Length: 245
Image (cartoon, rainbow, N blue to C red; front, side, top):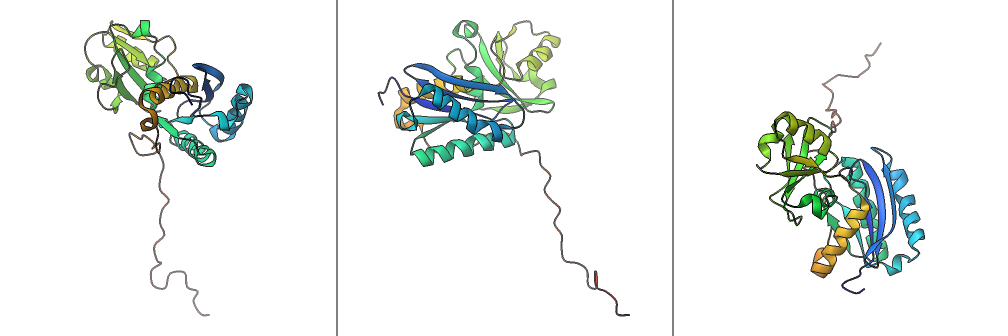
């Protein structure tokens, strides 16, 4: 690997799409992207095989793997991370974990970001959104958080805003109703894309080297939407016993 031109396989399954991409020679060499809320477990590995075949470099030519760590769908986050960790272990490749917020924010162009705070909004599938703010250079402005849609206006700073992410449309509607006429939606706002993930991972690797890699951990801003099974305690004395005739 040269520090300026890493080769990276990127995997994204945390949001409302499933995508893979190979970054090589300073650009996206191959990409697959498909909108889906379910089915990542069936589609992800074949998509990886397709982008690797298109690129033709082979796993031995990769310098690293990259994966989105969420937030997003609980199952999708786990599928993406498990697949990336398994490949990293099997191929002895470093793994770069990047939050979905950063990948979503990177969908905004330099021209769109000029003079604006970037608000990455990720759909939570409820009446709230996951939010993180970035400056014009995509440097995070504080920690990510969960915000009710009705409270979104009071959670965002004053001044021009650029909304991106798969909840950008919902956020823009709320802010326009609240009288915020200084908000725009990034043209490419939507589900996180592995091509953008690959680009951000290459940037991290060039700037930080081995410090950019490590054990990617999932980013959850709330507990998964599951109901634990009921536990069955011991039966009362005599319960379930058959009476002697």
